[in-house]
Length: 403
Image 1: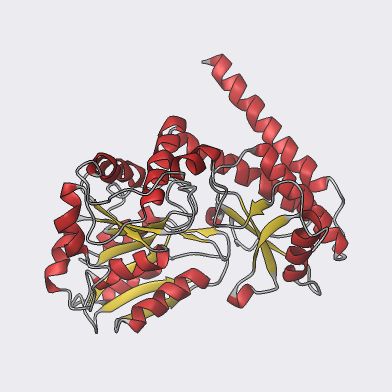
Image 2: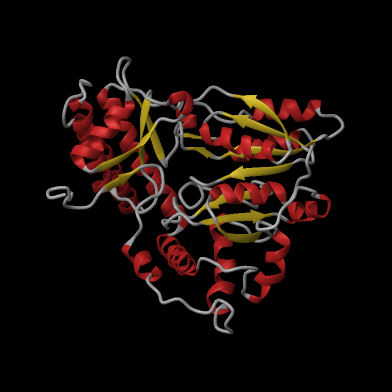
């Protein structure tokens, strides 16, 4: 239809998929090749080792699947558990809910700790439940590190301390889909047993890779695991991966993209990546405060540095803000899900982003809110974020000069 084209770039500010750097797009633009050739391991063998650095593990083993993060959820559970096994899980958002649902579909008995949406996993309640489990019937603790539905980050290190304090042998399962490569994540130091991520968020790739990092303790649990598995069986990968191959056809262009993603992250430095995400999130939160609105996260300790979930005033629907932003300003914002559907919208700020890109999203959000009748002062959020960014930059420069 004439006139339907939207000029310029779509401003993609959903919590995922995230923006793909041009370098990664170019890296994936490769001719198809024989994934059984003698040259293929030149790509894959370094990749298996380098991705471990993103998880910050020396002892963990990484498995890469052609799937979404949901496939990695399934792989982590089915390779280490048996039907009827008891699992302990905190539920405080749509993605923790979906992971619990997946576990139950595989015949696992999930003990759910309900937490208020806008908060996260409670180490105190987890410790209490594990101390009460005298016979060690609970085989695993499931925690979503970063709940994108509500913009909440849980303290995984505190969960591990709680498990250790209870002297409980359960495995620690962590969903890091929207945290790994964006937020500080320490597989070995935090005693994580299985960590899950996907390619489309902090790794800055298209969706299509599900990645699981597995501790030696979790690998040992495989010998007693009775859940049915075929496509996601770790054993098949353990036979093929050491030689640089996969048990079936891999997503070859995505593997080239992953290699470039890891190079980009290493060039910036993981600690700098985490600091940048914190910096950008502070600007987004400053904008929300200037608008006179609230975020879904109940306290600063829950604040996510990869997504800000913004509550709309009573009488308004967040879906209207999202629709107006997209149709009028070519800006994609995240929707409220399940319990918070219509009550909020989300600005994702993960992956390949800088201050000016986020300021554009904040500006478009202001206009969309005014268009649907939410009384925010145009420029207020942009100005607050600008002040936050400039103040942080000046403070950094003064610190460097003093050193």
